[in-house]
Length: 337
DNA sequence: GATGCGTGGTC
DNA sequence: TGACCAAGCAT
Image (cartoon, rainbow, N blue to C red; front, top):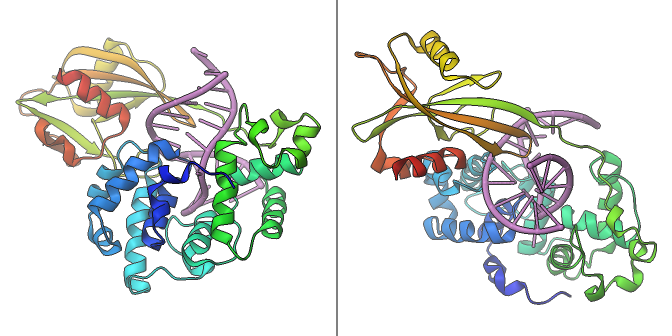
């Protein structure tokens, strides 16, 4: 098996389902290099599942700040509460029950089951799809239902039922360290002699993905209202990006706004009498599925302005109590200097 | 089953 | 630069 990386993964030292679950959720769609520091932060702050279950959502989101896919953080706390209340604080040793936890799908349930409890279940993540599609020369798209069924069945057949946890981690590690998406190290690969993709020169064509995500462009106009060391923030909600995080009050527009057009929109939404001082931007912020073009407008409200209910006035020294998207965090950091 | 959800790194 | 990619999940 592939040696060398284990020492870099601190959660490997533990068979504690709580620590393993934490690491698996953090690593969903996230690189080990980025996730490791967050894992350490979470186990330090929440040594036990009950500590996490009792934490506030704001605090968990704040700890998660910068890691992305923030529903993971909200589900993390929810799942901790579910384990505490429904299962007496112990993770169930059962795939279906594990899958019943918020934020735990097929992959994570199989990872916890096999690594923590030794259950004979195959994990099928991006690494496994890549390794199996190449070794066996399978061009079934991995992002369709047929592919999911086919690769899962194959992974189940290959599984070492005596050591499912080690087997699963070995395949994933092979995918991460050797059978990488680009420039795989076929010269170092223990499966090179059996690899159909290598033999037929199709390494760069596998795995096959059918769906391509299309990008939406959005124009964000942020109101930077800062007076006497305080700034107005607003918590995002609804089915949109950054749910539960804080940002500056936002006016979204269908296109880029000039200062004149912005002033008109501002008066329309929040009343007349505002002073628009200057604009910072446009700042481009790339999400996997949206391209944001942000403009930060430094504005002063009219005398006697009553902020909307959902605006929160925050001392600039107390920002660390709020989870901020990278875009906002960077702007505030830059504007403070 | 298709779509939406972050961020950072790479080429 | 833009497109792709990373130990997925929920709806």
